[in-house]
Length: 556
Image 1 (cartoon, rainbow, N blue to C red):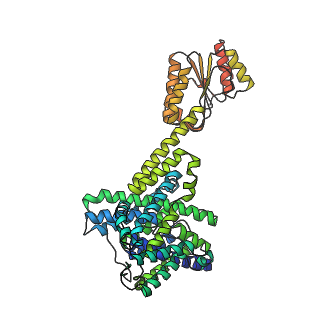
Image 2: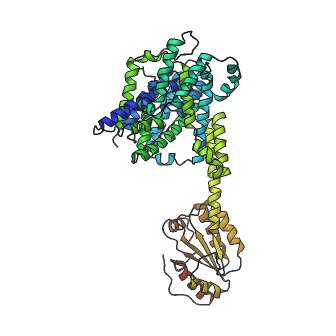
Image 3: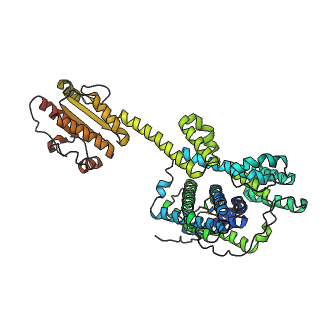
C-alpha cells in the first residue's frame, strides 16, 4: 500500500479555495481547543498543523480536513490534569507521549483492518457520548466566559460557578456575549465570505485591544514562533497502565470521530473512503503531533464540510489548510497573543452546542424508552464519570437489549409440530403425510440465524413434545448456526437416538453443514437420513412408521 497520497492538481482552484477557507475556520478553533485543553493555544495550532497535513497526505478520505476536535480536546484535558498532578516535572511530556501512543494504536487499527468495525457502535451510544462531550465543552467554558480560568472538569466548573456568578468580570461577559451573538447570528451570506468564528475573533479582539485596555481580560498570552522542538517519549513505570488506557481512549474516540466525518464527506462528494487507510493516516498525524507537542486530532466535520463546499476535493486541500496554519505559526504568532479567552470560550460554546445531537434528543422518546434510556445514561456517564466507562456501559447494555430482541425473534422462528397447522407453512402433500402419521412424526423447523440465544428456546420447544417416533430437523432456512445452538441440537439428536427414534436432517448445507460435521453431531446418523428437502424426509419417515423404507433418499 502506498503510504503517501499523490497530490494531483486537476482541481487546483477548488482545492486552493477549500484549503484556505478550512484554514480560516480552523485557526480560531485550534487556538480555542489549545487553551481549553490546558496546554496552551500554541499546542492547538501544532495539532492542527501536524494532524491536518499528515492525515491529508496519508489518509483515506480525499476531502477530509483534520485537526483538534471538541471530543479529543475533552479527553486530552483529562490526560493533562491527571498526569501533571501526579508528575509535575514530567507530566506534560508524558501527556504528549499518550498522544503518540494514541497514534500508534490508530495505525495498528488500520493495519489490522478494523476500520469497518469501528463505526458498528450503536447509534444510541454514539449520540449519548457525543452529546455528553458537547455538554462538557459548554460547562467548562462558562468560567472563561465570566472572566476566569477554564475549569479542568465539569464537577470543578459546577462547584466554582456560584463564586464566579457572584463576582463576574463584566468586560469578559460583554466580549463573550458579543462572540456568541456573532457565531449564532451572522447572516449566511456574510458567513460564506468570512466564517463567523473568525469574524468573532477579529471583532472581539479589536474591541478588547482598543476599548478595554484596563487589563481586566484574560488573554491567550505568549505564542512562540518557529517550529517546535521534538518531545521524545517519556514513561513512568507506575503510570504506564494509565498512559496505555488514555492512549486507547484517544485512539478509539479519534477513530470514531474521523470515520463518522468520512461518512459525511462521502455523502456530500458521492465517493467512498478507505476506512483502514484513514485510520493509518490519522494515526501518523497524531504520532507526529504528539512528538512535536501538538494536541491529538481527528476528522473535523465542520471544517470538512466547509472545504467541500468551497471546492476542495483532493488531499491537496488538506495540505493547503495545514500549510497556511504553519505559515501563521512561523511568522504571525505574535498577532494572536492579545486574543481574549472569553472570545475563545464563546466560540467553543457554539462548538459544544453543535456537537449535541439535538435531532436525536428531540425524537428519542418516540423511538423506544430503552433506546432513550441508554442514550441518557451514556450522556450522564460521559459528563460525570469518563468516556470509557460511558461507552463500555452503553455498548454492553445496548448489546444485551439487542441480543434479547434477537433471541425473541429466533424463538419465534423455532417451530415444532406433529400435526399440520397454520404456524408452519407446509405444502398440501406435507400436510397429508403429517396428518396420516397421526402424531408419530415430529417436524422441528428452524429459521434464520441460530445464535447462542436460541439454544434455550430449542431445548424448551423440544421438551413440549414427548410422544413421537421420528424427528425431522429442518435447517432449510438457517444460514448460520452458532456453537451453542449446535450443541443444543446435538442434545436433541442424542436423546432421540437413545430412545431408538429415527432422526432426519433436512437442508443442512454450506456453513450449517460444516458446523454440524466439525462438531461430529451427525456421527450417529446414517447418510441416508440427511436429505435435501422436507417432503423427501416426510415421505421416508411415513414409510418407516408403516414398516417400509423409501428408496428416494437424496444424500447431501
